[in-house]
Image 1 (cartoon, helix red, strand yellow):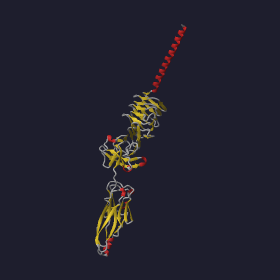
Image 2 (tube, one colour; image 1 turned 90 degrees about the vertical axis):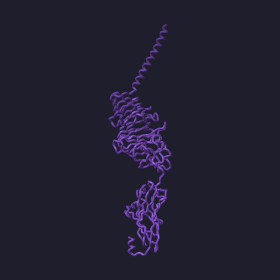
Image 3 (cartoon, helix red, strand yellow; image 1 turned 45 degrees about the vertical axis):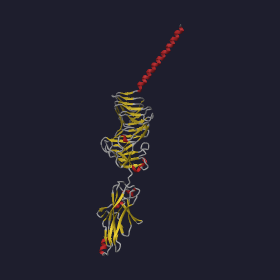
Image 4 (cartoon, one colour; image 1 turned 120 degrees about the horizontal axis):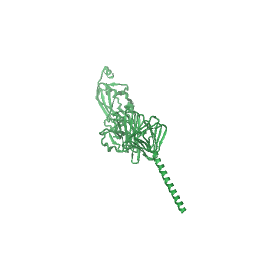
Length: 476
């Protein structure tokens, strides 16, 4: 009987120990759960180094002022205010699981670090956040919900943006500082960083939004509607750039990339034909090119407005040069006569010369003509001249005039005037006519069409004995 009672008592002790252990475990778990949720319902400050290992929640009545270094390893939910008073303060988002920034409160950061390698795009922003200092894109791509936006204030900047860390949605920049938008996009699990550089706006109240879209712009903006000069529109990507103050956008630099920019744009001769096109509301138009930098795969433009931008190829149009001859006198009586003339050299296709083949005007040498060229001559036959833009040489029976103005680049759709003093020497004791012909060298400026490369006047002469006074008059 005693043994039975002893056994029952021992079993009861064992059960009680299990119950007590369970209760203690539950108390511990509940304590841990409560401790992991960091709730701020009034004003809180961080003046040194602080860390939260789970969700940081600022309630609608709360205010969190970070004047030190804050580490957030999980979600941040802000229904109140997040502010700073010290420019050196840092918010470090350094989770090992995906992190979310949510809430309807005001989130104002000085410096921010994004560093999370738990997956390719671990950060989701569901609210507007404003950065006034530096955003360090160390690791991890950032995406938005429909309510989120990353805003860079007047003095804000970015660092360490790369293929591993950028923003896949719209980014806003305020103020008049140069800025490189840390933007890109993704197709399924494939992410690409496709930055856009903006020169400093002239207006210090400028507000510019930029977004890169890795998709066919033709889905929203008909790529068949384009200026005649444009042959092909990039059908794989485009940027949306909008200035909310209605002022002129500053110069923009776009970067092509073999991952996203199609081979229809990056052809073997694309550097001679590439441009940036903008949708003006009705059609795609060519933007003014400032520079093309092949080494950095970039093209800098002066935008004519805001909206969608993408790459385009221009039609292959070569320059076309033509001469027009104006001779002061085409009838010579006597042994010789002055026939000073001006040649208008023009370009017909609106294309600059290629900088390789000089634009060259030629006149065949002949004992019937005596030519004199003066680079300092400014006017002739009532015409203002451009002689200082031309060089002259008599070479292998040809009088050659080469365009050297504007760094040797003959501007498209312009005219340059060459003035040449000339004397016609008549054959003795005869009458007749001799052509005075001027010709554009066939490959001038890279042209290929040569059907309009010549012009001429006919010099009619009657050789009679003239008095010394008459010959002297012709020589003057």
